[in-house]
Length: 145
Image 1: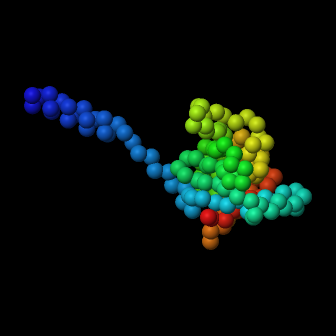
Image 2: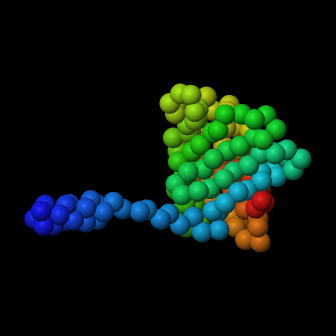
Image 3: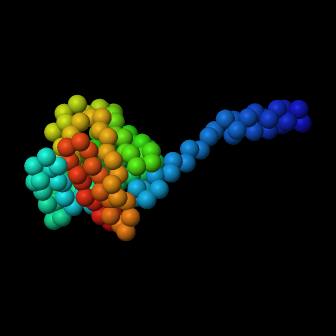
């Protein structure tokens, strides 16, 4: 009996060592951000979204996009924060009744200032509850919520 118990403890210890907890550090990006405006860099145009309820939420390796005014299906991107760069890729939606599915229609994420399924943003500023992101076409202005 002691031999079986000893083997069980060894197997349990090996199983626990095999599990790895990933801790992704998004720094000041972590959390819930209100998208206040989108500026077009080439024309100087500005889309004021301050009265709309459009949000970006950074958690771990995911970015969730939410439009609380239209109650749209959850839209997610895989995100990687590296220094002053933010990389977005592999957009997908979730549906509790169905499997997750990749999004190929860029019009779904265009209202959030994301123009393609693989997007690179430079982090221009991230302090005092303000986040400014710049792509090759747009500048996004967000406020921490």
